[in-house]
Length: 638
Image (tube, rainbow, N blue to C red; front, side):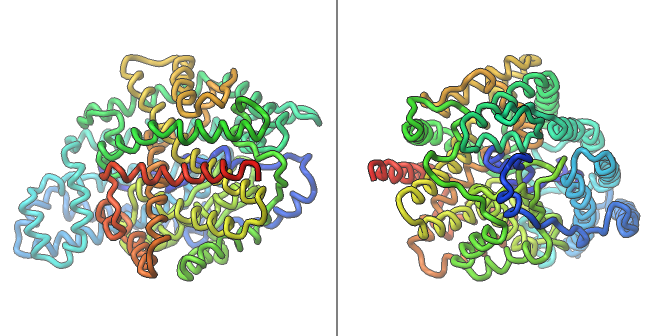
């Protein structure tokens, strides 16, 4: 279970593999859109990756690879099979600290290479040159990092008393104490070195290969959308974007096109899902995980009972959240029930406008600056230094993510910016991740990474700051209604929808244990959780049963999705504390972000008087959504 770097993993909203807002954050306008739209969205920034490497043919990249391989071989020669004897020496703690410094430096070096390759690939996943480059780099790093595999495994075989004695005797080693303590949590699930090596080496031809197949297949799909001006062949971002169009005919046409193409490819997506679920089950069985999601809980450093309490609270709140809101939205549309393609539609009679890039920047920076000038200063670097890639391009990864790269460099943000209000919220979300990643970088390559449950804190908090700033400036009932409705829908997508996704995954992985699932069986599992979560005022028409196929979370990071609900409810509680606090809140907030992964969630939340194990914690977070829905109901008749 070594945590060495062997794959590109965007963080947080991160790989749209990794965002709860894929529907909301989609898209590109078709050629028939107005010239005003095109004008407002010209000159969007593209990232500058030269802080990592100048290009795929950069000589420094090959030089760094050679240096990393040389150092990895030297590291293995110096320490493999020698850790126990080394720690028995009087200065064993200092010697281990020196080993950890070398190990951390290699993690940073390898992370820089794979981050660059992953970002280049994300820019155009259907370009064969980029795909080969990413595949070659991933394979080479996997091979190279095999030389380092022994270190964490061997370290975990050292007795607790020996390690604790060394930590107490060495100030240098005490610095790495949180990382060592964190590593020990994986000890019960650690396998024999040779088996770990086999799992590691085969990963590039196992799960990673199926992930890449999914990405490249999805990026290559085209959807035949029957519009008034004729049938258009659109990519997934373009098609998903139409689900938020003002014109219901376009929304329905997009939904039909998605269903048709997904259905034609269900064999491929069903096979990918079956293989990955079985692959995970094999790993879980060998390691001794009892529950299908226990490996994710371990990775997130969160207790199963905490997640179970969250899921239970959200399920019980369905009637007061999604069911209640969609009934209200159906009324606004003059319907008894919404069609599923209306779920994310803009409100009727509300003027929509394209928000240009500079205006979006000003909105987010003003909100961040209102909280803390330091927050605005950090996020401003992303705009000023070329750390954002905003335009929609052919083959570009869909959605949005923030990738921290490595502490010796800086994060990068990928967007598909179309100028919709939710695109502005996406910008706020990803910049929140970016601020978090910049602050945590001082912890170093081993302790900067934050568990997913806390990785969403800064991003969702950034959204909340931006929303509250816009709401305070709202003019008139309709503008206020539109802002409130947009926020409620984002929160439902973050909480209710993601918990429904989690429950779907639980059903899929549990059922897969009994044998391979047909695509129709997967569709049935999907519909069961969607109907329950969305409620009686959303009609799930024919075709919707296929919509599980495009969710990349299920492929890249099984059971990742509950982290969004965790983060949203946490931030709701955190923001309530902020509203009733003094200036000390800002300092405590930055201390929390700066801790990275060096502290457990309980220790990070304690200064704010919050405890995720408290049964009332989740209910308080959910009540914030209920209050916003109640405010919308109160606007009726005004």
